Every structure is written in C-alpha cells, then in structure tokens.
Length: 121
View 1 (tube, rainbow, N blue to C red):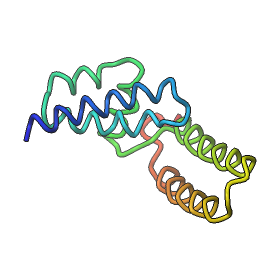
View 2: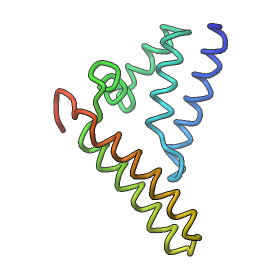
View 3: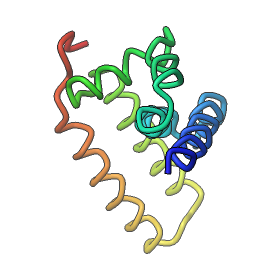
View 4: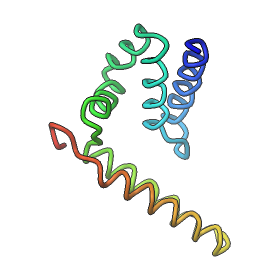
C-alpha cells in the first residue's frame, strides 16, 4: 500500500507542478494531495515538500490549521469566476454554464468558509 501512496504522491506532485505553468490546472489542490500521499508513504518527501519555500507555507497552513490564506482564496475564487466569464464569452450552452456555475459555487463556498489561518493574510 505504501508504494501506491508514493506513486500517487509523485503523480499529484507532477500535476501540481504542471499547474504552475498551465493556467487551467490548479496547483494547490494537487500539492495538498501530494503532501497527504507522501505523509503516508515517504516522510522524507513529505518533509521536503513542507520545506519548499514556495509550496511549503500553504501546505503547512492547511495541514496544521485546515486554513487557506486570504490571498489564496482571492486567487482561487477569482480564477473560477474568470473561467465562467470566458465560458460565457465562448458561447457555451446554458446547460454547461449552469453545471459550471453550480460547481464553481460549491467550490467557492468551501474555500471561502475555511479559516484564514494564524497570519490571516
């Protein structure tokens, strides 16, 4: 089972890193999944990910406090809203737009109801 968690962690890490350069692919959820997978398979890789100066702080904030920073919340909700606006502009059907709006509303509600964390930034 440990091997499966390690492979999953590697896959999620790869997807998270792709999300850094691809605007449609989210980074943080995949890095959180990678951290959780590495916590179950490789303490060394888990520590490495938490120690990363860019990705470590938001992961630690989530693991320690179940929190998402205000900046990350603004970026996430803003990105989701932008995707919906682009979809409207591209003329997607109303059923696709409705499904997209519903999923964005659920995702935004989850994100916005998480605490900001100890720094509150």
